[in-house]
Image (cartoon, rainbow, N blue to C red; front, side, top):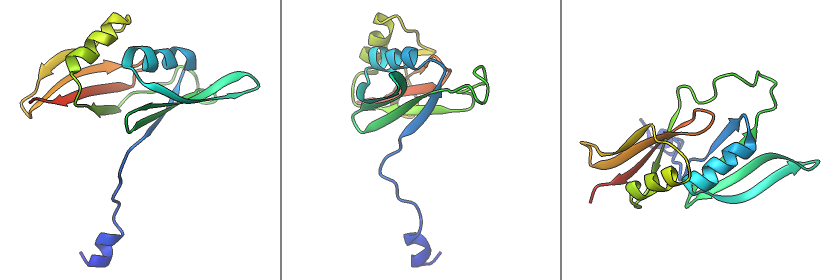
Length: 135
């Protein structure tokens, strides 16, 4: 590989995700109230909420209301898992989710690679692993 090839390679600083959801209000409540994301911006047309930009530190998510053009019942989260890494206590985050009526796919557990992790799914089936380094 030449120096020119290396300079043309991608060097990203962040990754944001845009998720198409069945019920924007239910998803907004899940991300805001259960997970603890902050609302950055709400986007409405003719008084109808169509999208919400969320943030948690440098992590950004955009929720988009499904317009049904591809079928409202299609699988949305199949084959995708996103990892949220934090220095916060994953046990405290898991407790917040449970306290707000949510459920976990897996309980917080120490992993052999030096992280404590739990898993959760949003209302559309998008999977998240929430991880913190074991100190």
